[in-house]
Image (spheres, rainbow, N blue to C red):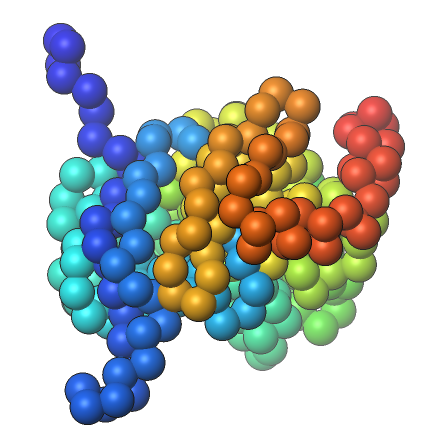
Length: 266
């Protein structure tokens, strides 16, 4: 490569997503730009309706892009995704119960993406994926409803990781979980990013969660990016925009001590 810098894992330029009619468009995302360097964790934060999840879904191919451009590893995305895209980019949804097939065992849930992408050594890969997310092998032939919320989210993460993607899109991955379980899952995601050299794009309404997980944060309000923040080594951000300051105060209710206790025991 020489002096050439590698392209960003994700780069979006003036991305817009409009819903509704051409006469009365709802600008869910309005000319947003940012880039996520390889192996970084980048946070999108804002209240519901701010457009943060819409950006994630546009990158994943679940929402159509109305204008602007999104690139993954330097390749521009069109509104139709090829199968190869989902080998590189996987999404983890907010509610693991809704995203896991109720009549499939964990084994089948994990085998399916391997079959779609033509992987071999299915047995070993399933065992390895369960081990990566610390799920005991006894869960392999159980159904999602027989697992706790945290265990289900571990299955969803294992399903995303099993095709060996480089990028994970995380949509509020802990907001449906109990606070102590949230901390466990956030720690797991941090460990996996470092162990597997992953890039994360994380959406959350909670600035504390995002500043715990990410190096850089884009703050969204009503479809627009209002502020880009850097997170320092102590997990602090120094917002200047009044909207972000208000968000920051709102998230102080999140108990950082609980997270730190988990780190000490990890």
